[in-house]
Amino acid sequence: VVTPKKAGVFTLTFNTNGNLSGKTDCNGFFGSYTFGSDGFIKFGPFGSTLMFCDGSQEQIFTGTIAQVDRYGVDASGNLHLLLSGNAGTVYFTKQ
Image (tube, rainbow, N blue to C red; front, side, top):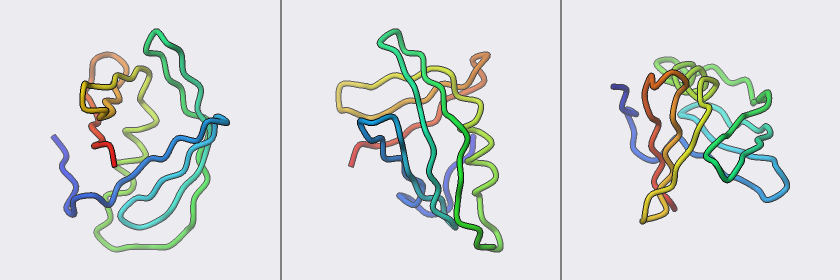
């Protein structure tokens, strides 16, 4: 289990045109996504700003997001990104 050191600093914003943006505890990033109504999701390559931040959890976050292949949304609108091979889940609270 990996928990962010600071709550609310890791974000994802999905645009309706297939692009997304987000923030880590260090940099901003952007990329693309495709998804299906069957729960499939795939992220395209990400670009990001290149600041160095000592103690950042950014590499853990981006490495984990790269392993996502399915998604779900609970009754409260919170996003659950499921890692391939049932390796875990990344939870995002709807803002």
